[in-house]
Image: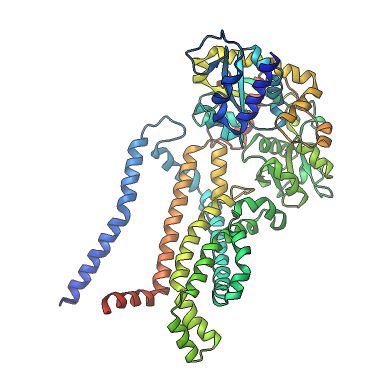
Length: 333
Length: 277
């Protein structure tokens, strides 16, 4: 199957740039002439083709790893991974059927659900590490900053990746616990990629970053404060792989196969960090000096209902949902 | 001119005004009606019913107290930055345009550089400009000014170059000083084209106002729209789009009013050209 495996990878790679080119390029490498022609357009060579929309961040390394290692193929799935710009953009991608599955943080999914999208989280994405000091995320301040702890954040500009996001909820809750009114913090949304420069140039006073940007900023002299996803809960489930309720009802066997393959991939990733760091080269261009230093998130195989409840509670508390009731149990299959 | 009493003329003017007002609101009214009925009872989260969208005006935009409402917090900074950015573009565009349009060698000298910078969309400069300007008002104003200056600049250059040579010769013959020449000949002569450019620049400025606020912004309409999108508050997002459109209408009306006053002579000139010859 060596050949078939590399072919899958090639397809995934090509698909990143030429989503539509897949069909034409597949025919010549079909090896098994006895493969019965299927009446389903998505089935080829006995494999069901699925498309997964992701953000090209460290969190989704297990998916790339699982595809590379042939785990998804073993479960009868041929995966096409499509990179998207932002988490919220992935939800319409999945509800419109462009992607069968998507990757997003749970806060966004809770808000999407409250906005009328019928979604479910089928597999966990990634989890926080034991504590703030060893987490893959952190609030950081630039070298020489006067901000020594979260109590100094009042009136300061803090970069987060999206407005009213899990990051904002994390900072708000830690600030509140330290006696700072979160409403006095000015949250500035910008891409993680822009944060190191914004921090160094003084455009923002602090930034909440995840790896590899945590290591990048640290190498540039930034100091992590004691605020991270792990501050909320040492076992916080940050994100998950989701699909629509409709898709789960129509294709339960595909969802089942995806969950089984994802579980195996997550376990593999959790057990072998060197392979994960290699797999990052499949879809990122992280500087080797950063890659070897950086902290990987924790990958557990079970969706955490507690984490969904916590994220829902915080999102409601800090007014992310325009007063709408969030329903964490509704996101479970 | 037919013989008509002043009273009849006033009546006719009033009728004309009324007719214009009806025409002005007719299409928006029809579109809103279609939107209302087509979206009524919609269950698609991407396309909420118009009634739900309109509710957001009271629950999201115009909350009490008014001074603390999202409308004040988002629209005031946005429109202020828009007007300042547009103002800078106008001054820069006209000053540079007059210089470049007047002095041919300057034009040849600057043209490659101008074409180069014109081809760069200002929003992609945002992360770089951020390093010099920070992320406050200066960045957003710069993005607007940098994008809006081009139609004004290019139209001013063409307007100045296109001034009737006979008029230029006349100005020469009368030995008009540089200041006189600028205010009596160049600016009025290029005026209609400057306004054409400014009108285009205004709509570009509005677009850049929104885009500029989607990057690293914590206030403004663009920031509100980005937040609504990120939190799947689709109805609020549509309400923001309605507010944005309304601002566009108000600005276009104001612009038209200024143009009518400043270019009054030009309208009269056109009338004599058409009717007089």
